Image (cartoon, rainbow, N blue to C red; front, side, top):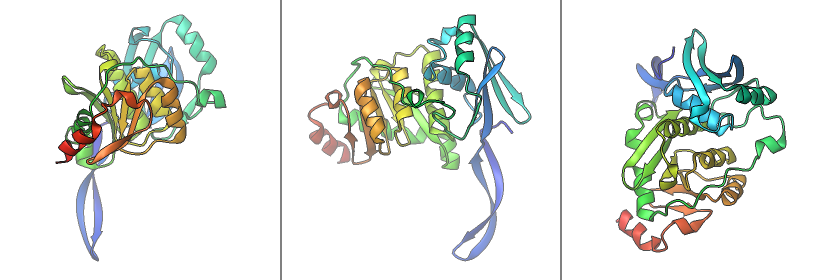
Length: 276
């Protein structure tokens, strides 16, 4: 099935009593990314916003430099999965053939199939200075995510990645059973809409590993905010990339790990105002 949510019958045991009912759960399906007729990777993901996923994955993997490098993109639904068939210029295809991964990636796999340590910890792109934000704006942005997570509202089982700007609020939000996939989908959505990410925040409902920093740097956002903690390598990578990494963002505040200058100095009073 290629719909994002399925209704499944199940038996329920609560407080020693059995009953029956139906629960909505997210779908998970193989997504094959192919370029000029050859398979590059197979990832497990949620079958929604697949054009965004194809474009974002291609950008974040440095397969393409711009959405314009994709000559054509077709979503082909098969019995046992979905192929995202892309055709690139010949020089791009030749480069892909040299580093083709031929992998089957588990859900949300970020660097599966990379065949060297250097490939796994490649330097992230350097982001521009971009915009600064107040603590009130950061907390307001994170609080805006939950009501817009349509799949998670139904299932409580998927991640989200979103882009927020002071002028427009949540400009784009994408969901997936895999946190890396959700961020790839967001990258694709922003690229396809020609959005300049330097004026906003990338928001994550997951922890921050190094791949999430690399993908945010590829998007060009100066600040990323996550509900969970980062890894030490993610912090070092964000520092080197010029990204302000904010994590453990909860209703009562957050923690800034790198490039604190993009967060207004009068944070204590504003956090007090928000909590109040």
